Image: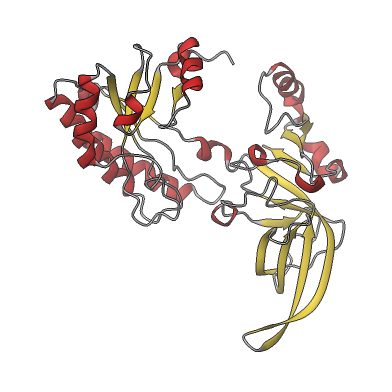
Length: 349
């Protein structure tokens, strides 16, 4: 990939021994851990360790704390054991979780990290790296909350880890970068109208079947938290959302419900819809289950940039998802010929 090993962090706290050997062979030495047991697996004497602590997950709908991280109370014993085993603990890391209400959980967790730094100093093993993890909101409607998070982080790092501390601060803002970068174009493959009874009242309802799936690019676990907005690709785009609708994935899985019983606009069979905020945890989950396939990736760029972007794609060692076909398309061409999108498409800006 052409990335310096010093810039790579092996960020899983519970590591396969074979993976650790691979990391060592490729000079990747920075890695995380959260327990004494993991220390006994580390054979690379050059390993630089970050102790992962539990974050302040108050108000989080998705918390990592049950699966990863130690408490501040547990940290001293772990640090003492690392010292006795001659393991090089160079810092602290955490992840506050996702879909939280109060951005101040970053500040409170940074304060907790400072407590662990102080413990290490007391043990004669001062630390130099703080990894504040991910959880930075992405998406086209999240800029306000992102700014609140930045303010919370800035105030806390200025107080507890100012430049004079010499501590290097790193982060993992993957979702922030990619969430809004991709739109997913889906086709209506079928529609069914029938009345249903809700709370004793007969209501008109439509079932809409799409050529995508919760078992493919639409995350079965995270979609409901992703603030996805769906609009028609063709005019009229401003349609009244006055039809009670269930959006179904187009597979034979009876649990493949994309959106149950929400107010939606009327659609036509074979028309295309556009889903925004589909850059995070989408293509990487694609498996082609039940014939859904792997969507082609189109990068929609200004006409003058088509050639240069095409060259980047051709030369890149990386591909979106599972190596789906990728191409650069002129923004003008895309506007004029919406029929270019066929058999499912994920478009990146």
